[in-house]
Image (tube, rainbow, N blue to C red; front, side, top):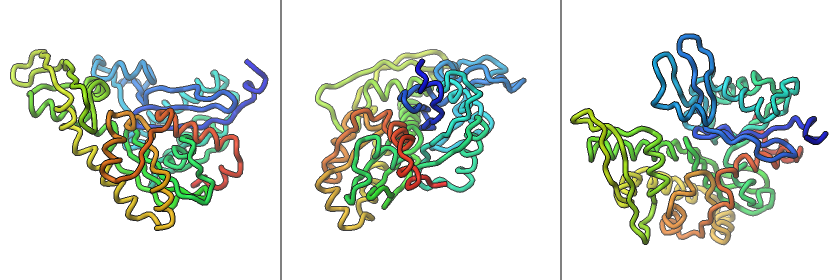
Length: 338
């Protein structure tokens, strides 16, 4: 470990509904874990955090519960979010808790003052000496390599776990922003509900997510795909396996995908004419895990007529953008919203 690493105390955090990523100055992304925590319901003690806790969802014995303390990009369970964040900060600092880091956190557009305060308090309780909140879509644009500081319009659509954040940015500021509570988790729920309605089969979050990743799509694909799904038969109460097609899963995802496309159209309608011309030339960039859904870029391109590209590393765009601000005091002053 180098001397610069030992004394590096600046962290950037993408505190997401599905995953939390932490960027450490001079090190890059040092934490990438599911936003899940497992605790003893009798004592309140934390049993596991991150990947280990995610494996426990739906499998915990009596007296233990595994939950996601984030919902739609904001804190739903303050106490558990604080424990989770503290654990991830410790891990990022290599357990050096005598260090009090400066922390930058990306938050959804339109976050309320109460929600802001919850994030700030959780971060300060994790031993931060200084906390800055920044717009998540702006961070995604920066992490995707868009010229956010230039006098030109750039558009980013960040499809995360709990929210889809859409923003038009120019001159290091947000011209238009909207946060839509429809993203990866809503897609998982839609798949589970479709399977339940059509096949009378109850499946868990893990299964729905795996199905989305393995055969999910937003636009018809050339080679048909199939996947086996295991769950509990609601009519007979016994385990059952079925086979579903990509066309069925695409049908299940249609309402969520349509909502995202409509929000993109709405953003374009509200963009100033001068910046609209820039976006028409440069197109928009997709970031977040939802950007990796097959055909999402094609669907948005067909619906809007704009060039659409996917960020080089869509899963880390937000935290990478926040990490760039860690190293740039001028950008931090311009983009901090608290």
